[in-house]
Image 1 (cartoon, rainbow, N blue to C red):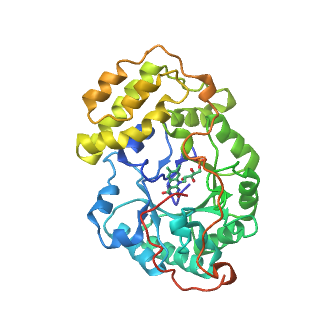
Image 2 (cartoon, helix red, strand yellow; image 1 turned 90 degrees about the horizontal axis):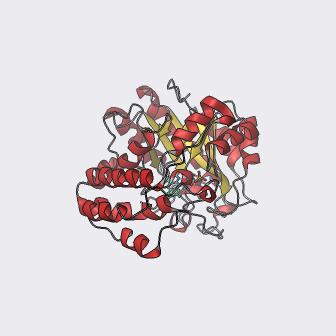
Length: 372
Ligand SMILES: Cc1cc2nc3c(=O)[nH]c(=O)nc-3n(C[C@H](O)[C@H](O)[C@H](O)COP(=O)(O)O)c2cc1C
């Protein structure tokens, strides 16, 4: 449940900047039920009604439960953004991002650095919850375990968010220091679930429907949040739905290359539609190509040509050169895809770790950079 909205199956498409736009969400939504979160929006850009930002929050007419993620560091601006969402009817659910590990963000005290400042974190969340309440908008947070293993915040932050009245708490079970490396710590998700009464959503390293079932069994979470596993594989949401309805015996979708090519072509068309013209739509689609082809024996020249397409006709010509009968590569299953970068020391503002109760708003931490 998110507020009074039933989430069935208990699956959330993780917000991914540059990926989870209206086009990608449509492809995923067509596969299965769940909540499909929009790309992250910065609170300041929203309240200033920056045209590019307003375009990014486009939802399709048939998106029944419009879910939007906000990034903010200032309680007043965050509350103003939530109020605007309610007054203008922009979304049905708001999630706050406290997981971004990008150095440009943490260096200024934003994203995954912020929960360490517990009072400021508490104020942002409670003001956002209060602003959402009159509109009946459920407000959730998404966070990491903490800055690093010596500065874990997730249980304390989860309890504070619960106290503030959030509808659910999602945990990407890595520290900021880990970025996307190593394994997500599902034990931490179990610990959080034990500590809270509000629903807990687990996030990290769900590559298959079976991983979602394993995470639920291991942690007792109320739902799962799935990010990189669906890159180049929007049909993962069909597997997730099958896993939750049929249990471990579900049969995963294993499209042959011809089917994958059709989905690629459709994805590119939807992007052209969403971004307004062929040039931008095709340029945006290029980043998805390697994900769709992962594990298929497709030659380097063809891959390179595909990664440079500038029109839908060119894309379709090149896709026509693929062998449609090639079966889905079994060794691409259960494997990480997308970002898997190395850990790195977290850049923080001077003295950040010594000032947990400082409530001042970090300056310059509002940014378009994102991640989680
Ligand atoms: C390309 C990319 C962009 C991301 N952007 C965001 C974001 O804007 N907000 C956020 O909370 N998390 C963001 N994340 C993190 C994901 O939501 C998710 O927490 C993370 O990938 C771990 O889940 P996974 O193992 O299922 O991928 C991003 C991740 C990737 C790979």
